Length: 534
Image 1 (cartoon, rainbow, N blue to C red):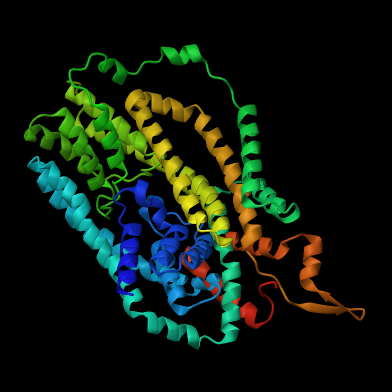
Image 2: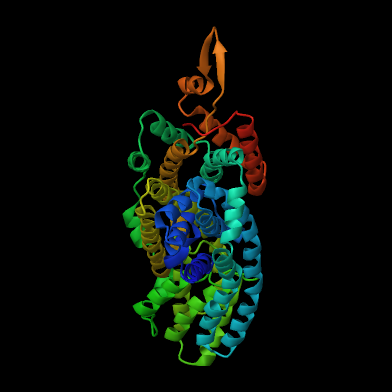
């Protein structure tokens, strides 16, 4: 058990210590972290089932501006570990532990972001002396131990010492409450769907959610089939709405940045640019309340300094501007900012006069737009589609579900990140501005949103599983209320409850909605109004 506890503690640490999001972005999500937790505890299949069940609730989880509505890491890892130790047969009951742990985990997140401020100042002092190695050290080593204290150590203690406590709690739950908690598990995926609808849903595209729902309900299509249909529809809409650009006009556009580098004295090597790009995926390793990703950005900048400048004094002088506040979506679209920084730093090294204030002004001007586009792409499109397919596979008992999510999501992130980094480096800020204003990106996002909405519509039908056991007698004949609803509209009750949850999210905070859903589900179960269909 000690070995399992140690392994789970490392998984918990890596889920929150984002040393390289290429490797551990997906560990945030329960479908992956739950599977790995189960693997560490000798229950990989049950771990994948628990992780997928929890993931459906947090399908719409995101942290805009760094503000987390709950700790998805605590929910996935601690919820799965507790479910395994309790010996539960129904993986959906892992939510019994996951939801309370997710609330507790907020304290861990606040602790990490507060303590990490100290490492930023220590790294700044090292940078003033031109010590690039210590800048890298402070971005990784102290932050690892900080996260381990907040995430890893509690996970270790839970698995190593909490088995008896968890089993006692599980055994003390009466059968009536177990049935009620099953209803909670059947309804709670509506929260994840509603969170996505709040983020993605708009009047001109919301019909695609209903299309996905009824394709699953009336045609019996699975997640993959709906995804394929959705992609075909989105491509059709994109190309019919596409206006060809004037190629000759675009060929004449030549930015000032490109002209300044026609005959550079100093040029970044491809190796340095690759290292700088890869390092950009570590900008959240020491995320904190004061500078957010500032230290990580400075760490990435060390690769530019070492390649462009020869003396410690020069490196120290030019690196100091990188420690400023920085916060954006850094994985899909955000790398364009790092590419642009590499281009601008190269210009500075070749004698182009760009003051620190101007340098950071360009970065600040792009942080917001890139975050908006990147968050929409990552949290609203890529994650729902890849995680939906992965969860569907996992809930059918396949451990390839978590693997599919990890591989497909990470591959898309790497391809998109490297592409946008090179756009920033090669094209410069004017070309980026023109691209953003051309409308092409908006059409791409709309097309992807169509796919995402149809997929989550399919999810809503398949995984919001509550129904009603109520019966009525009409003219001496018994009639099941559930059958009456199904004759009017297949899946009417799950659809209605999902839309109701969406409405609640527009009025209340996520935490309050979770509490409302818990109380409502348990009350309706005890009153005999809601149940899990046989």
